[in-house]
Image 1 (spheres, rainbow, N blue to C red):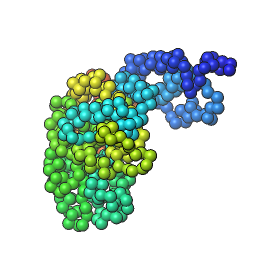
Image 2 (cartoon, rainbow, N blue to C red):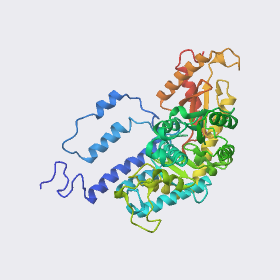
Image 3 (cartoon, helix red, strand yellow):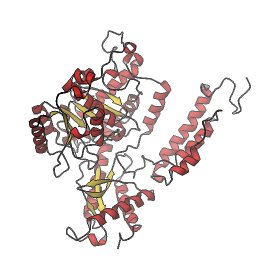
Image 4 (cartoon, rainbow, N blue to C red):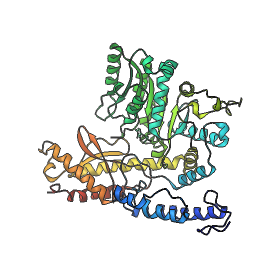
Length: 502
Ligand SMILES: *Cc1c(COP(=O)(O)O)cnc(C)c1O
């Protein structure tokens, strides 16, 4: 064989490169990673680009002949990176988005290189044991009972889905698993607050329970589930012949960061025999921060807890997590008996199969990045970073309260803040006659202008029917100074909106 056009030695193919070639590829990529982490603060938070412009740069017919890795890395550096939003930027406050950490990206690389697949212990003995260790650490961080168990999944939506599947199975048994929900005599009912994440409704739809059977429980003044309304709705439904079986509490709503009253909800769940699921995808890890810890009293009583390590454990996507108080209850919902999955091992730990506890068969080695971040940083440093995020949100609230051109629209419970800009005519206080629709319109335009500025990035929420600028601090790089810059950026964005500053 003659050397290829790329100059690779003849024993070196694209599918099976030599160790020397792998080393070169890795060095080039790692150089980029190091430079990226070192310069992320200086980049525009979000790109100004369009789908058409990106297609123009990227779309092409399937390449028949291969090309050099360095060419592909050029496309990554020159097109993908500038065309990306930088979720690790200290003033990216949109949605609920983690910065990622360098050690976790190394872990993801190593996990892919080892190519461990974790359907069961026998498929990946040490990776499986490491997943158990990482899950145990998470249980400890949350204060779960030692007999709880769990596993990693693609994300919080999947964790919520699997939890509701387990809840449905405990209540309905094999009849529904075999014959579908129509075999259940009465309409099933799930309870969740009006601020619950839409993945709950989606799961109800996918499980055949129906979105319409998710009863939306009213909120208290802090946007938390009103437990009196929960009880009222359960009683109402029972009297009407429906079948309440599950309550979903939020431990950190995505709108305002509210943590539902978990202890009271647990007592209500017990009283009515409901499965208690907690959607703690955003807030759960805040239990590591001393100032937030009391909010999570009652969490350990939940039958299941959905979490997103790719949020407040600062991990890159994807990594969701589901903890079951009684793993055996979940097992009944997911166990399958196909011959090709039969396990011959007799030692229970070695016969362990993840597929009995969730919908997935093949599974990435996500545990490696969870383990590496927690073992490398330690829970104290993670807790301190979360505490600092909470402090930044509270500081923003103080700045807003002290200003006359902004107002807070919801209390800061964790690290989410919702506020709006007030044009001069609206600053004389409540009843100033400012038109509510006009305020919505001005703030919507401010948001667009801010997102285009590239210096700070917020998303939005609807609070009591009004448009809010919404931010979430979820980044160990963010400082109090960034919160000051954010407000200045919003003021500058307001200057771009006709009629907003005069
Ligand atoms: C992010 C989030 C979800 C969905 O999680 P994904 O990982 O995006 O699928 C569900 N609930 C809450 C409260 C969240 O913050």
